[in-house]
Length: 370
Image (cartoon, rainbow, N blue to C red; front, top):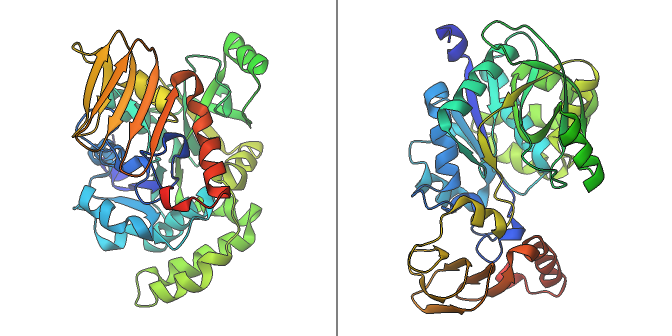
């Protein structure tokens, strides 16, 4: 890659979201990006950061909640204060990614940013980096670029991207125009997308010149844009915290897809690089079952430093954060999550329903375990 172009690239890692379908392992105080869910020895945020280093070096910004400052710094000790953006409270992805764009724009309007969520599992890393290189070259032509994921099944859990014609961008042979972003479909529609081809999963990865990102944000969400620019102007000054506290709470809550990506696609300003790497957003405990190998001794996937599992003719996933035995006998595809103050027992088939349990616990006032 051209050295001058590479020097313009900055990575951004939005690290938000509790991951309620992974409760009680993932909680407000310790969301899923702070956990090692693949047995790799790296937490999800550490792995995300490491994937970006070969292209971004130390030019990486993390946007997360104030409550996670200590944990994030423990995970990423090389992260400097000016590149750690702490949200007083969640305001959705347009505010998080938009603020990163605004801060970077104030530092250098020629920056190309790449935003990648902290809680995704990707491999092989070199294939991802090739796609990212293509995305950077395409963004340099004046496009907002997303990296779409080749669908492996007719999922109803993700939005889709309808890809159009090849763009013939130098050093980006797979770059295509984006016709439109489409919402999460029903099962029949998803099967049609898969059978017809030309559709990719929307993984929320965006690479763009910061000026173009802000231009579309200003057109579609002027109040949000104005507030973010106020914070950005104060960011590298002593007024940072005062202005952040004054402005942040009143910012509109909206996803980056609605605030920028969809209207930009309608204007012809969005391109897509098809990602041929493996990708998983670790949305529930069934995903953990896909991403880890069962023990040859027990036939069960065990997570947690202290977990002790006894298994007799059983399969599933067990997480434990204390040294007591979890015994499984004659049961398949079970999920057991054993923590100090909450115990979850379900099956892979019902893994998506954990979110509903969290919502009911919250409604009942049991916030101490959330």
